[in-house]
Length: 183
Image: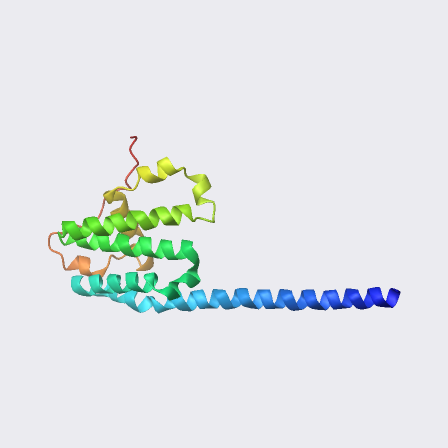
């Protein structure tokens, strides 16, 4: 009987080890696939940062298409929503800067939608730390411009995308962070 129990315990331990190893290798595989997918968008993002208005717009449209693809599901719904929020937010800022108000409004609507999805799908405690009413109160056009400029400067050694330099009617963004207004 003892031999049977020891053999069963060994079999259980071996099975547990195999299942754990398979699970852990699956996680590492998923993480590496996520990183590879994100790396695939780097070329588009670099062209957005370094290009003129036309190149920047085209690159953002390619980023949006890339993150809408079936392959983007590897990021999970929250990751995909966050990347689409950023891409549409950047497209909004670009269209606003060049005076395409209708295109800017469409991009802003998409950015708001994907930002709300990002909020709703949050798994890092963001949703519990910021109530929905507060979250929605700062979804202003000025906030989106501030947030996208901050992201771009953070990723580009403090510099805005190159297309901004070529816009004669655009002044450098020196505004302070917009504050939410009470409804």
